[in-house]
Length: 344
Image (tube, helix red, strand yellow):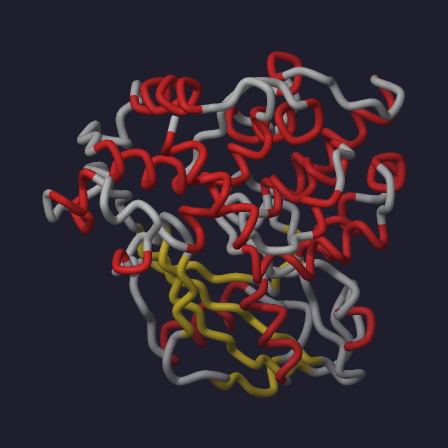
């Protein structure tokens, strides 16, 4: 088909030189695909390089502690990806002898590997004829063929996968999958694509019908929850502080943080001060409490908006389980807390 030929020709001329494209090793491809979920290439690249340097094989990653993995992942977000990455590395190393499954149906059984990632590994590592369907693919196909199916629907992925399968050259599925994703990432971008220089500007149905900015159709919107976090940054006579591990399920699971007061709304100094005096550090005499930031730091997650304040709490004597500033920096933190530590 002309679409496929033109697309692949464009890709071979315009593709970015990315390290995971220069290998068929499923370990490296799996790493890159997990890291690039919900993440731009520019942001993910340093992490990919760090991981492949520190953990050059799946056995190295499996042998690491979860804290090591989370520390190296720090700042990349969606930390469940890192925890699943570690567990899957252990499963592949210890249960499968370090050999990744060589087909889509077995790959999708791995923890943290969904339909898209399984298809990517299967096609890029083993040249299996299976289409990848991500946001880029939805966008390119919906615009070129004027497909108005709501991509938020559960049935949408199957419809787009069938269309991609029809277009895919069965003797080289990997290059087609790479090409259509790259085209969506570089040319057929979500907002204000430059259709004037697009290779498909004479055949794209959305462009002819002036619907480029209307496609793909996506109706469902995530409800965003506001949460208010007040972190207590303790300092004792030795300038040691206290941290705790987030063990509850939810955001930042198994990362570290300062003692936390979560409130229903943004609270003032009087309220937080009273909470600290009545409920925290009762073994030590309070010397002073002061806010570190007057305005809340807004930290946006996919479905939550966090309003974060840090409160400096000076106490007399020594706190139990206190740690010094050097040790503090060895723990994995959410990036907003890590940035605060680095700046103070």
